Image (cartoon, rainbow over all chains, first blue to last red; front, side, top):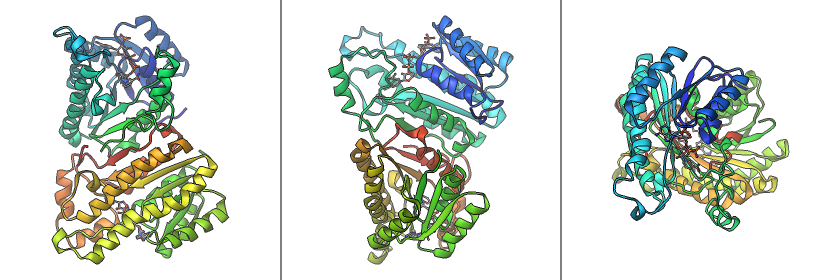
Amino acid sequence: MGNSLNGRTILVTGAANRIGKAIAIAAANEGATIALHYNHSAEQAIITAKEIEQLGSQVACFQANIASLEDVQKMHKAIEEQLGSVFGVINNAGYGQMKSFFDYEPNEWKQEIDVCLNGVLNLAYTFVPSMKEQQEGKFITIVGDSARTGDRKLIVSAAARNGVISFMKSLAQEVGRQHIQCNTVSLGLIDQDDLQIGEDMYRKIVKGYPLQRLGKPGDITGMMQFLLSEQSDWITGQVFSINGGHSMLG
Amino acid sequence: MTNKVAFITGAGRGIGRQIALTLAAKNITTIVSDVNDANANETVALIEQAGGKAFAVYCDVTKLSSVEEAVQEAVSKLGRIDILVNNAGWDKIEPFLKSEPSTWEAILNINLLGQIHTCKTILPLMIENGYGKIVNISSDSGRVGSSGEAVYSAAKGGVIAFTKTLAREMARHKINVNSIAPGPADTPLFKEIGEYNAGIAEALIKAIPFRRLAQPEDIANAVAFLSSEEANYITGQVLSVNGGLAMV
Ligand SMILES: NC(=O)c1ccc[n+]([C@@H]2O[C@H](COP(=O)([O-])OP(=O)(O)OC[C@H]3O[C@@H](n4cnc5c(N)ncnc54)[C@H](OP(=O)(O)O)[C@@H]3O)[C@@H](O)[C@H]2O)c1
Ligand SMILES: NC(=O)c1ccc[n+]([C@@H]2O[C@H](COP(=O)([O-])OP(=O)(O)OC[C@H]3O[C@@H](n4cnc5c(N)ncnc54)[C@H](O)[C@@H]3O)[C@@H](O)[C@H]2O)c1
């Protein structure tokens, strides 16, 4: 347990379960106050919040559909009332379908773009202005490596997230003079014991990972902690992959 | 992380010195190697003053035999090497068409062959120990190019490609190989460059979203992260630490 985030409020979106939950717990372990966002997973959010409380950290849960700017603005107000100003936002919430583009109905792709791309825009539009006032802040977004490499079965979410990467770079340029760091973390496949693929398929996928295993949520938390800390204050506009070596770009 | 041993090249001054100080502050015993013995000894003294453990060794990265001797000396003292930071580097900024073959040779030898020499010598030790973290210092010029740094950027681009291939070959041995690409940093090298390029610092600062040069600490913190257990699933990657100057 460290104290690098003592007195800092960190918003993690989609933090009721899985990767978001692991990130929220790791930030709480560093002393952060956690604004725990969820959309549908109300019960799970409460369970996660209890776990965080047991670590001795302050936490509150906030519901929002991040595809709705109005929802995000309401959430912002509620967080500021309950927890004070937000130092860091981790855009973890995401939605993607795994299928060929030609199996989509017309406009069925809208929801993925609304969550993955517009969701990040909504959060930036709402949360970054108060960071500018504070002259500090960390705005971090998670994407998948498919956003950088393409993936025929993740064609829409990958496109939306490539847009996010570009948005994050422009945003970093816009708010650099207010000492706000904006960075993107790009993930390979993370195994959370629910992949629902056979052993043969698993072995085949792992072959594409030089470190010869899939990721786990714990592989991501160290990077998040680093990017939230002052150790990374000169790093902005960058995309960094955590992927066991699956792709090596740039 | 306790009792780990790090071998750092060009650790006599600038970024390398700060990397040694930062790793030593994390309980890592550092082997401070450089061609300049006096500077290396000064880095060791600074580490010891701060309560850390360090040894100086002479190492000219451009010569494989010098690297082999330095590594042998380090291993006979400390038994092993867990972390290698390839930091030694040098550049002379000038238009490519004005540059001389002797300058190209020096630049390629220090920046690219130097890292090849240390990896060739130290990787077998890491493989034997089943553990290793290598951080190669490249440069943003190797990712996006930089006027006046044609051969240097070729060498640093080479470092990046070398890093990725080693990462692939070494993954089975649980050795992570990554690269940090610094943007312009406030170091003795940069001051040297400023002496024959008036106004370069001011011009760069204007172009950097954070409106300042890097301090060696900025780079050293990122090296510390990549050489830690927190980064075990990260390999073959390049991280720019540049205040937003280039975004790849
Ligand atoms: N798992 C992987 O292998 C992998 C690989 C690459 C990238 N990623 C990315 O990493 C992040 C975390 O991964 P994960 O597997 O933990 O994600 P996940 O379970 O698929 O989704 C995270 C959360 O996003 C929230 N969410 C979805 N639509 C939303 C909306 N309209 N408004 C607000 N929240 C919404 C959900 O919250 P509720 O449950 O509360 O509704 C969900 O719990 C995601 O962005 C994912 O795309 C994951
Ligand atoms: N300063 C910058 O703006 C900048 C930007 C991008 C990348 N870099 C890179 O960062 C690294 C460190 O740069 P710095 O600014 O601290 O440089 P520096 O010149 O201040 O320090 C470099 C050190 O390397 C040593 N060295 C030189 N030749 C050597 C050799 N043959 N064998 C062993 N050691 C040798 C020097 O004695 C010196 O101690 C270099 O790889 C450099 O290319 C620096």
